[in-house]
Length: 390
Image (cartoon, rainbow, N blue to C red; front, side):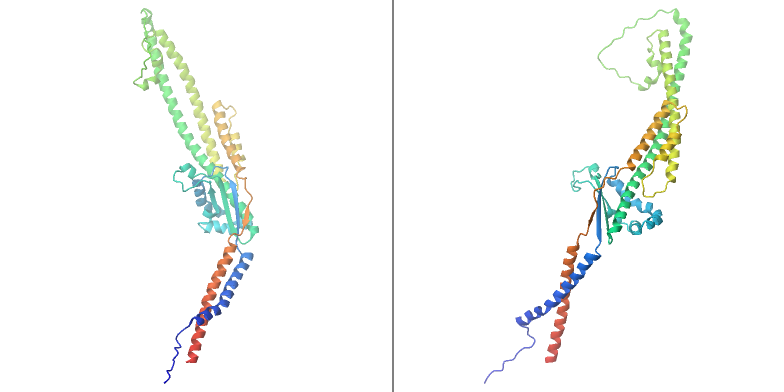
């Protein structure tokens, strides 16, 4: 009696598996080439363009100053909304004022040193040799004016910060110098008063000194150094008038000589006080002018500031007045020169990096997606055929 061979319909042989994957190839190809083609069209037509420009740092920028600038520039640019919209820079305005991390990526200081080196000093870590500006956008024509505005804005803001810091420090230093000079004059007048009293006392002793024989004093000059215990005595005129060993007439002559020097020193100090007061007045005027200037992302014209210093020169100016005003004018001229710097720009690089990677990744994703869709379709078809055969 022959045995009946039964077949199990639930078993899947190797041939069916191979046929299954062969049937999926069209889905993989359609998905890969389809999505890859769409990505290629996007990369050729609408892929964002990146504009990158390097500017040589010749205005003293460093990493802390760049960090401060990136944190303050959005608030400084906010009042310029209408001006920027009129120039067609509304996109850049939105990025600066609404995207907190935009400036961190758009403005970067480069130094060329390995920041991972633990042996670097803080000075080298904060060093900036070039400033890199990077912008991205769909239209190439809009990137160039945006890049120019950003470079000019950083330059202007750097100059703005330097002038503001200089005005504050100069005003503070002038107040300290005025206090110290007035204290110096007070000490000089005190020494003058003491010397005059000593001179009057010696004059009263002069009649008695005429009948007194001079004492011969032999000074022992050795190579040993002698340190004066009380250094404050060195400020007294009588300590330089022969101490207590010279004849009275010589002492009086020495005091008179020191009084003449003190009188001239007091006159010089008083002129210095007037010069410092003039400096404070000019600095206050410069600060008022500076505070009235709106920030417009352009370098500050220093001519009005220099004109204020020129107009403040007195008709009968002393040497001290001339010296202190010349110093102020020289510093302002330095900031005027700074305004003409930061122009050594390397040619801007316009590129569309990453387009090839985008197409390849899109093609792979499309192939995987086609594989999944094809698998679902084939499995559902196999299931329906099995159901119909049953």
